[in-house]
Length: 457
Image (cartoon, rainbow, N blue to C red; front, top):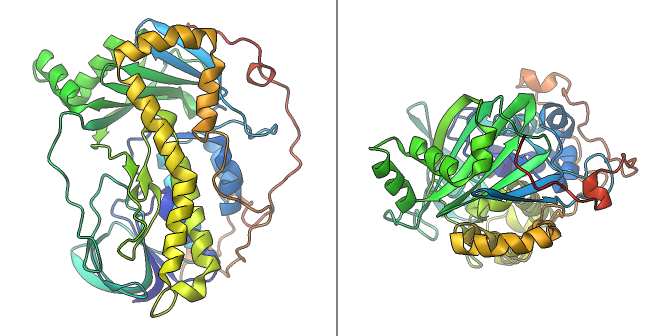
């Protein structure tokens, strides 16, 4: 099997990149190791900056139908205290605020759109090794106990940061997991029904040795996600007589945040606790790399305290597709020009490295009790400082330019895929973006009216 591009990972980053390349006429294969839908440790907050991009990908209408309420307010909670501030708005239209999107909804929609565009998907399957060099890669793929080889001009790494990539003999070896460290951040998530949360509020939880988030999404389901240091998790397990790590972390969150205790007082567990990690925040994208193109967390990972993980995945994939499509003759050849890779690395760092730095600063402040106690009185006096920090972290700014009319031409339906011949359910594919959005009635976040800093009733 020969393709122009092989994408490792079918999450938001991999599916977005595959979709755009396939629309432009590239032959694309996506290798995803898990079956969809699947649960992921994710805060599930999608910033408003992504709506034009999602519309251009042809999934915006469906996501709006299945998303939770608009998020117009952020609340920083620490022990018995809470400070509220408006979230930054993007423009003045109905999509000026972010929404809660479950990964069980987002990931399958994007990957299905890539298939409709002409991409081939191998799922569940794993890329074991990448051999060769740019322009002439051979990838070893296993699926259902059988192994096959796929030749590709371009290989895109979109497998995230928690999973080691395939072995690669053209540059850096497979990244092995480092030994456990006390300061490692482990991630946890659970969902609940019948909580006492107010719609439209994004709660940011400051913990001793960790941080978290809490938000009410679609169908009355509340997501609680947190990152806690490994040594704090081990200490909590010892204190709780060896409870599972997730249950011990639940106790840490309840103990530290009165807001969580109030919200979950009469709640029912919907989906049990799942975990992942450790997190590897930082820039993973080398200037002079091994010939692989990286997007999403494989390129760089921000502390999830700002909830920008999905945004960085989508926008970095769009950025990479721009570079590949604009320089197709220089990368779809036997000797690709390394200047294209360096240009992408520089553009990626310019757009996303500042977000990673801001998120790291906020995360380390939230994990330290003394800093939280010192900061909260000041934030209570100037709550819009939180708004400013959220805006600086990218909540209202898209790092890429999405044209009103997508550059990619519509690809004819694949004759070998019956599902591709059916009309798209969203009815919005390849439709130009509407630039004349009517302003809705102003909310307190728009007018600057004071916002209550109280816990849920």
